[in-house]
Amino acid sequence: MSAQLRFLVVADDPQFGTWLRHRIEALCEDWGVDTESVDAFEQRLALTNTAEYDLLLLVLRFSIDAIAHSTPWLARLNEVADLPGFMVIAEDGDELTAVQSMRLGAVEYLPRRLITPELLHAGIRLCLEHQAERDSADIAPGEAVASRSPALPRELIPRYTLLDTLGESPRATVYLASSEAMNRNVALKVSHKSDTDEAQFSREYAAIGAMRHPSVVDIYDYGMFDGREYIAMEYFPCGDLKARLQNPITESEAVDYLRRIAMALSVIHGEGIMHRDLKPPNIMLREDGQVVLIDFGLAKHLHSGTRSTAAGVLRGSPYYMSPEQAQGQELDTRSDLYSLGVIFYEMLTGNKPYLGATAFEVLQQHVTAPTPELPENLQHHQDLLDGLVAKARDDRFASADDLLASLAQVAA
Image 1 (cartoon, rainbow, N blue to C red):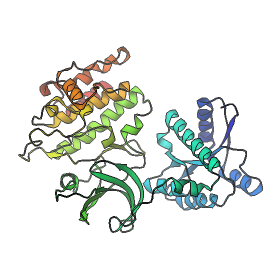
Image 2: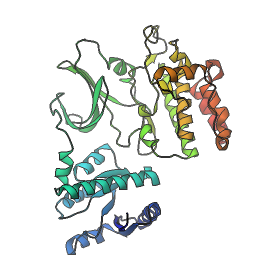
Image 3: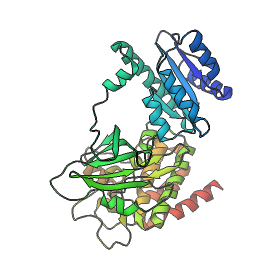
């Protein structure tokens, strides 16, 4: 852009405000950044205006002692005329504060702990594009957001108010919903109406409904209504590993994610459960970096005594499927470790190890293609990768605990 864009960082922590200003200026030479405290910003609003700025970055605390101030303060900004678009950079926030911030006008919400140059750049671009759309339409901020949001069936499932659509598949739609009874927002997965009475989510509920662990998604509710099956679960405003992989991650971050996911697998394997569909969209992220496994629709108890799938039926993502799963064989926990190895390769290199024009071509490579080789600068991780994605199960790590022990030994 030829004209310089001007941003204002509003932060009561001057050290972080300066850090943020330097990071923004490093992203683009045409971006100028000023910083000021919340008190100085309020004086600005009382005496002048913010018309000289293209974007505001508001650094807010949402801890128990601060949320009573931060949320009403955001609400008051809606009364300010000609306020530019703004993003919230949150400290001590959660899913509730994320939703509240967006409903109060924030174009983007970023947890302070998760900020990287890539995420910051993407967030700024999103805000600028939103502002450009708003200016071209010449309508109010609230109207601009509402006009792009299709009407939701507010009473689809009793006791839940739908707020947004998070995702959709041929089987179901996942909504962000509010539960007044639980006083929280949830991810509400609702099946599409079907001519059959086959339950789709009962396996997931049976597998982890009673499990309580930070590495496993919390299931709050399950039932049927008007021919639709539904399951209410924990909502994660920080998104999933798939979204995180849209931006480069460092080598050390990849190893740390590997360790955290292995810890989560150790938990469910210790409960006698195989995931069988481990992939980046099923690995959610908390603000503190904790990973959480979700979508146990294909999960199976190790001692259930039933076959993995019906004959000739393959379920799961071809990109992350173990050779034995691709061939319809009986599975054990080492199949989840193979999927984790594929994810590890993708985190390190930014690419999937096996690609193909069809799902069948990808599955064939899992069975017959050579073990993926890491680039020369990452060769020191090759033994670790081989222990995860070996074609023969006996050549892999015996368990998630063995993998964790190996990672600890390398770290030491």
